[in-house]
Structure formats: structure tokens, C-alpha cells
Length: 214
Image (cartoon, rainbow, N blue to C red; front, side):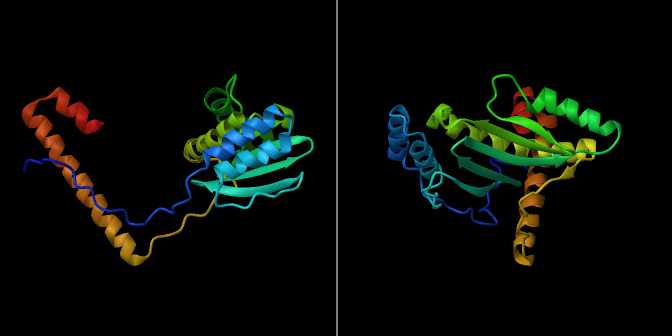
């Protein structure tokens, strides 16, 4: 059987749609920052990034939002802004040393705004800075990159080093009907990939092999 294309079924579950960000709010936040209104600038930046959320008006505030399996906590007061993302609890023995080496070489980095921090045996990705240094673009970068970094690293550390998940966002399980649809999609996909690999072997085509593995 020669395939002309892969099957592309509809998603099993519909993604939650959030309102699009208001970029006028971001421009206003930049102007407020340039005028020295740092707290108001930060709040405007957060309203730009989280249009569906009510951002506290006062000089202090906090909220938590999910990103994949991570929970991100944002807190601010007169001293500055703190963003923290729980990562893992380190294992015991030599595996902890290997896990820390991975954190230092793969997760932390010079010039990176967020960095891993160790609290006892718990590792979090954290960012802290004074309000006067929080240009809106810096806030946007931290809140976009740190949760993704944590979401990519936590499963790897659990599997490779025996670390324990830390304060993870629970995953909503599929019901029986959704599971059956997901299983059908899974089996169909890999059946088609197997046919493509057979086609690669028949044609001995490096181009087709590269496209299939991609």
C-alpha cells in the first residue's frame, strides 16, 4: 500500500481558547515604565499576557497559572517581582549529584533571566528583580520561557535520575470514549509510519527516509 499522505484526525479534546493579547496594553506598559511608574507598568504587562485573569490593582499581588505540567507563581510587592516554577525534589545518593550536574549544564546558563535554585532538596526555576529593572519585555520573556523550560526538564529528571515530581499540575484523564478515539489515532498513525518505512526500503531513498523520520 502506497500512502499519499498521513491521516490527520481531529483532536480528541478541544484546547481551551483564551482571548488574544492586547498589544496596546503592552505599549502602554512600556510608556509607564519609561515614566517611572513601575508597579502600574508591571500590572499592565500582566494584563497583556493574561487577558482572561483579573490582575490585583494594589502595590502587592500574586497569582498562579498552569503551563503544561508546571505551576507558575507570580508575586510582586514594593521590593520587586518573583516568578517561581517548582521543578523536582532531588533523589538521594549519587543520583542527586548527577541531577545537579544536569541542572548546571542544561537548565541554567549565563545571561539567562531565570535560573534553577535549590531549597533543601527541592529545585525551582526562579526569577527575581527590582521593579525599576522590570522592563515589560523582560517580564514577557521570563513568563514565556521559564515555564516551558520547567515543563521540558521535569519529566527528564524524573526518568533519568529518579527525582520526584514537585507540585505538578494534574492532568485531566480521558473518558472511555476519548480513550478509544485516542487509541485509534495512535494505532493508525504508527501503522502509516510503518508503511512509509517499507516504502523507504523499497525505494532506497535517503530523501524519503529523512522526511519520514522528521
